[in-house]
Structures are given as structure tokens and as C-alpha cells.
Length: 234
Image (tube, rainbow, N blue to C red; front, side, top):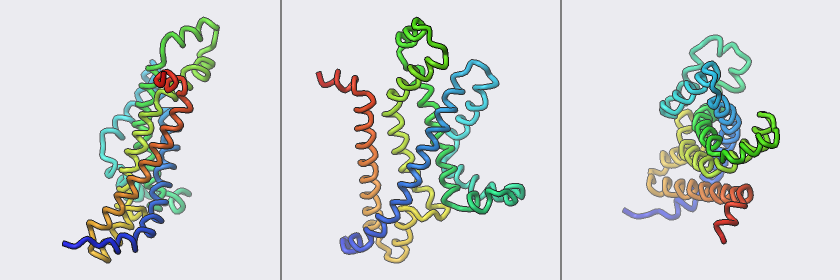
């Protein structure tokens, strides 16, 4: 078996261009998922069953079912309902593979982020919360000035891992014809029959994206948690 480096060099620009769609999917889903996940995480901390049970069931479903099933349910399933087909969202959003993938990824990652947020909120040192109470802060002030900022710093490493998981999961968007890195790889393989070379090139691009994301999160973590990194360097 001979290794065709020329095929990698020839097709690499096309794969690189397709990776932009992959990056878009990951970044949009991660940001939207963070917004939804923080909301769900805060609701999960409530002691009122009417408040915490709905997000608990949401999290249980999206963490307990495969991402591929969720993608298919949204892309193929929603179109089975006439009320969805007649809605204003059908043509611009729900009939488009790209936006269906965004919705599926957002809903999925939000479930995991919600648990990350809940864990981070519970990890905020009780001494800081007691100090806020001693200063006479209201619950909303304590949440805004103490709990959320500290929890945000605590959750950065776990959130960065979730973004990387979403990057790897984004390859499933190709199953509903989203022209991302994986879809383009399959299309090139169908023409060239060079499975190993093309998947190798795609893998290199995925690794590069992962490295950039991890590097960015590491720098952000150092900026947000500078006190922790300062102590570690002493």
C-alpha cells in the first residue's frame, strides 16, 4: 500500500475551507448552550420542586440519549408535524440542516453545561458567601457579585472540555448533509477512494482546532483565575 501525500496536499485547502463550518457550529452551539446551560443550572439549585424538576428532566433526557438520535429527532422528526411545517420557523430554520444541527448541539451541550454550572456554584467557598451576608448583601447582589463570578472561574476548565467534546460531536452534523469537515472528507473519499489519507488530513485539522481552543481557554483561565496561577508559580 502506497501513501499518497499529493492527495493530501491537493485536497487540504478544500478540507480547511470546510472546517470553517465546523468551527461555526461549535462556537455558536457553545455560546448558545452556555446561555441556556447557566439558566438551567440556576433553576436546578432551587429548592422548589416545580422549579428544579423540569430542568432535571431536560438534563436527564439530553444526557441520557445519543446526540445522533437528538439530531435525527430535530431534523427528521419535527417535519412530521403539520403545525411545524406551517410555522414561520419552518423554511428559514427547521428545514435547514445547518440550523437543525445548531439547535441539536445547543440543546445537548446545555444539559452538560447546566451540571457544570451547578457543580461550580456549589463549589464557591462558603466563607465568601458568609462574608457577603455579613456585609448585608441581598440574595441578588450576592449572586451577581460573588457567586456567579466565582463559579464562572471555577467552571472554565470543565467548560473547555465540553467545547472540545462538542467539536468531536460536530462530525455528526454530516449525517444530515451539513457541509462541514467530515461531510467534505466523505465527499472527497467518494471520488478518490483514499480513505486513510483524507481522514488523516481531516484528523490533523481537528487536532489544530482543538489546540487553538484549548490554548484560548488556557489564556482566558489565567486571566480570570490569575490569583490561582500566581499562587501556583510561587
